[in-house]
Image (cartoon, rainbow, N blue to C red; front, side, top):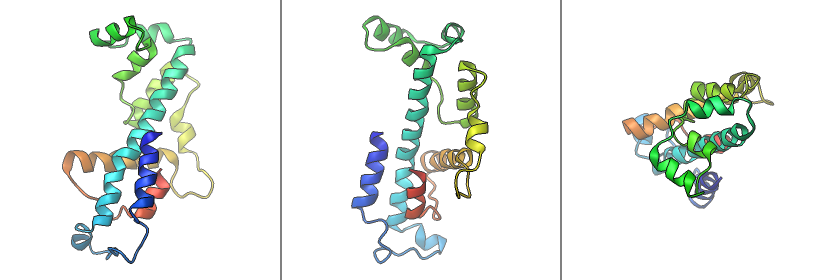
Length: 170
């Protein structure tokens, strides 16, 4: 939640929606130098971290009451440091299980939730159309993950990721 708040505050206070200041030219090499587009690209990791935290928190809450809790915990890769934190009462077992899980790759997120309960189908639910949106949530999440990876791992900038798109993604 904090990262979504940070993204919203940044968007609001940085005047990203003001087209008079640093106008978007729709010319790739010029827009790649546009500070407004750089700023919108910088927001992507914050948006994804909030999504990731949502799935992690939801997973932890559901694991506490899952009928498959015992087998999931037995198959978890809980490290010594986490065991120490559990012993000290700082971390719960479900939190330790979720700590090393990947909540960015949507296929892995879907599999993790299916392990909790076979009836949970994130892919099916998020793939359904929502209101008048052209893009379903599943596709949006995959797009955000790919965009984040391009920004972080390849230092690429998406010159088509305009300020209006960030509002739709957070």
